[in-house]
Length: 171
Image (tube, rainbow, N blue to C red; front, side, top):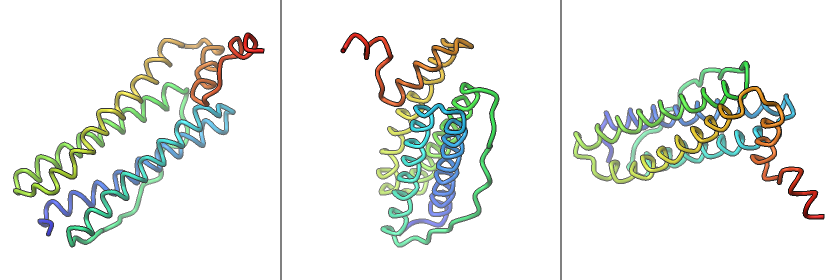
């Protein structure tokens, strides 16, 4: 059975993961509207991952005979100045999620809730990976700068397509 403070923190985390889903989905829409299909696909994939994360915690709370409390989710940002602004916001959000998970781990340990601590280790590892992936994309965008052909090629890479030169040499 979950201790009250741990249950509350896990419920807040469920809602934070749902907010992350919403954030990535809004970013996907932003890129879709600008015909950057690779970026849109990348963001949509990450939105789906955030929903999976929320549901993992949801099911864990129930498995520990806890009560899930869903709260209102704020509307995500809808517009950005550039692709690197979008990805920078995504990285910032991932860092907030990481800090929140770390705080729940600390709380679970202080409460002697070793089952929750064990469960959250997957999320600890996942957040390291998530931050690295988003930061890598941001670093690529920083390298590209205002070079529009570079943005086009990165968009194709994110979509899984080969750059045009590679396609031509394959024929």
